[in-house]
Image (cartoon, one colour):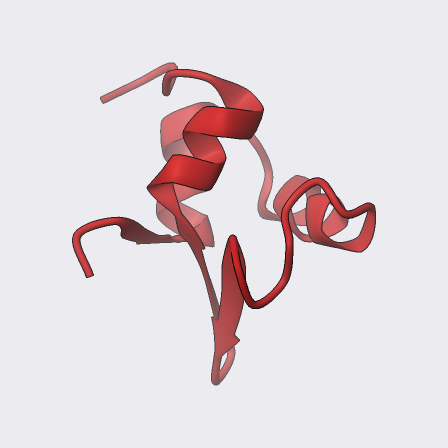
Length: 60
């Protein structure tokens, strides 16, 4: 589970809104079930997918 982060954490680290990440799934930039998945009400995304699509985090 080290490679999984919540949308809230990802949005903070990369300076993006959670809605931007949800739209990325709708547009196919992040693949639902592969790059990101919803557990209950919580969305999670792989760190690898975030690095691939958005580069290094703006804050650590």
